[in-house]
Image (tube, rainbow, N blue to C red; front, side):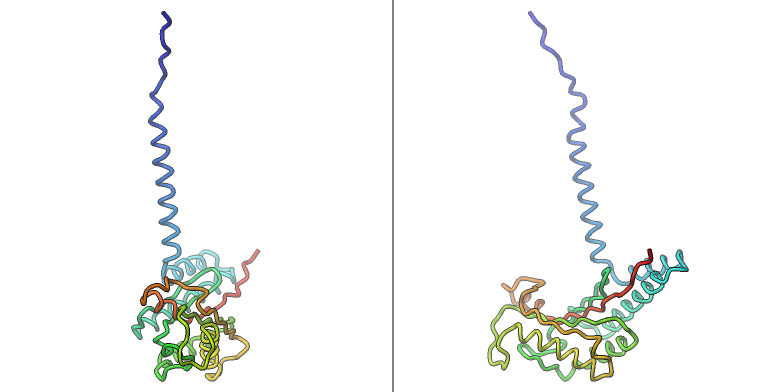
Length: 216
């Protein structure tokens, strides 16, 4: 009789171990990506000032630190007013401000509310010290307009963006710095199937464009 060959199974533990390590790596990468997206402007400012201190001769590092200071100033101003659903993000290209519809407009209207100046006046003062281009974009939900002189949500979003840009220009800011855009319901941030989701989609976004060139 031939003896059956015995297989060495002592290394099989490496298969589930490798799978576990792969899963952990994916998990940590996902957590890192989430933390990177969600990081507050204070975090960005700390990193930018550290970079500035380490590279004192870099104009990019100096401008970057100044811009993160600006983002923190905007956040502090918005926090002082205790705005609900206000948002601010710092990305590699923009300082991005989100203002919910009720802060600025009545539903279906492109005319600024009487109290909108309480929010926009502080921003106008902050923007007056900048030279960067500023993009103002309007967004709506997908419900058709009723009893409005505007034909559709696209026109409403564009008219709202223009109203905001006009407000800043009337405060003495150069009109060539402002660009108004209307996206209607084409860029939702939430589902239009619920009242809460539709409310989040009705918003104005202001983006301060960074024009920093990295040094070679």
